[in-house]
Length: 169
Image (cartoon, rainbow, N blue to C red; front, side, top):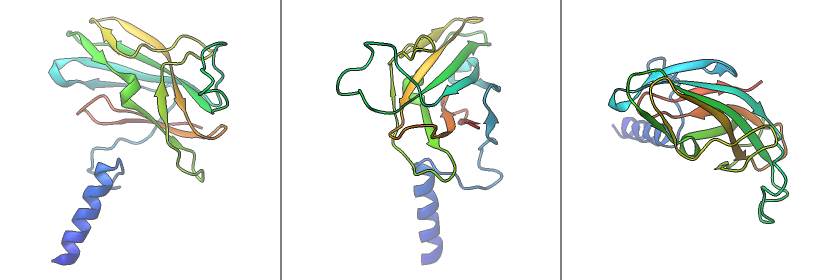
């Protein structure tokens, strides 16, 4: 009984920390290639298509974008696209729903999403509001801690419909 309780506690802790069980029925989809679009049903009846178009790692910011506190840090820029393919308005918050993971063999790193604008193009807004048929694309800049390339996966969490995970080559 103690062993079962300890196993359940460990599995729960892993799930809460963002880990996966590796079980075939845990709701996780296989990792997708960069450029792959995924459509999800959203809470409230909305429907959206998500695409990770590219990953720039390391990324350079536009002149004057960084404060002295941020200069010298390492950055990755994620080019994301959101499209409302449903019949209801949707709202996304990519700054809070996106995370990156290290390449295989790299040490885990802490990441912070920012509203900085890379030289490659415009930053995504903090809040994306789309009416049916509308779309938006732009860059989300992540602080990655060490000089790149270090990004191995990009995960977007559109809510209860499950995480979308892209593998970065």
